[in-house]
Image (cartoon, rainbow, N blue to C red; front, side, top):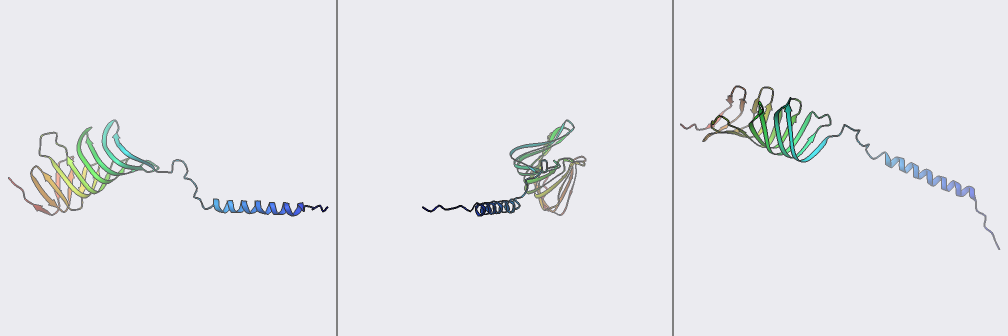
Length: 186
């Protein structure tokens, strides 16, 4: 009868080597994964809903959207698929906006809209409805200035004008057009 002796020293060295290799591989692989973002540094993404901006206790603007993303600091919002947007003046709606994409500064309430953009001036005094169509608009809330620096179509009553650019000051009612095409009827 032969008894086999185990060489415990060799077994312990082999087991130690296996554990050491396992730890090294784990450390190397763990270094490949990005660290999760620190709390408060990640953008907030929302799907389908409404975002509003208020100045004091008065409404300033509202967008119904398909997707919105708010920057981590809350200063910028990126809104996609704006089905209905409304700008308010003294708490009353005066502009309606639809656009493919809107970027909003949530502190100043300034925004830009791109894609298929349609703006309608809401008439509360019975005047002719006015609308603007373009692929790019800029809104400066402090001065209530709407700028359409790209070619645009303006509709007012039954009239249609094609213009190279437009600036509309909603505080004064002044409209400045770039080059024009179209007719003005009586």
